[in-house]
Length: 261
Image (cartoon, rainbow, N blue to C red):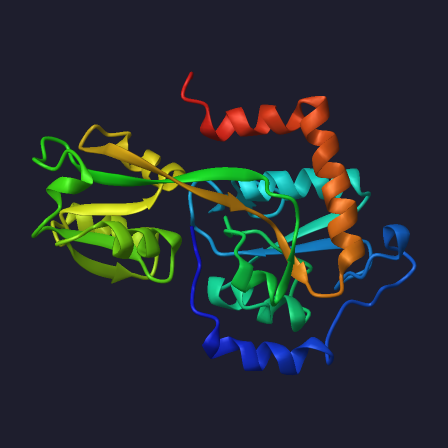
């Protein structure tokens, strides 16, 4: 999914790295460093269906695969849970984490070597693919049909990287996120949208749009913490592994991604 340029925020992140941090109080399990004792504060950029969406009926005010997964892990760790809607740039750069805004970044964030320079990642929790969305009845059937066509992509995303490397002859038009991409293809401003498969899937529900191709790029999502908070990552990974072993991860996965409904 989202993989944006770090240059604009790296300096600010570095300045905040040593100035801010959690309290590390005694209410935290095993001395984990948390922004607020006894609470796992998670930041993500919503909406990004089906990973994070606003839901006034949910305890945290949000729902989605990322939200529910981190919420369940927090419960297993004996922690309360808070979710904050935060700009993605501040998450992937480390700024929101280093400034003490949150303990964990959860926003369908692709694990990359560049991001590892500024962040600690949990074990991968989701394998994703890119996909090509077009209007139903379009003459675009594969990426080979995109020459001379306009393709919408998310700025700084792995979809953007894939498009630049593989869509010869297509005109690429960048948008901030899925909401803008969806409006653009509905309005006919672009001929196709290339982005994460699970994010494109909901746009096919009314039958007016279809996914014509999927692309395996080897992407894996991870949750992120600030450098130095190894204990939080260690404990999170332990509970995530337990959820995979007891079937609760699969149950949650099927809730959001199963096509057999």
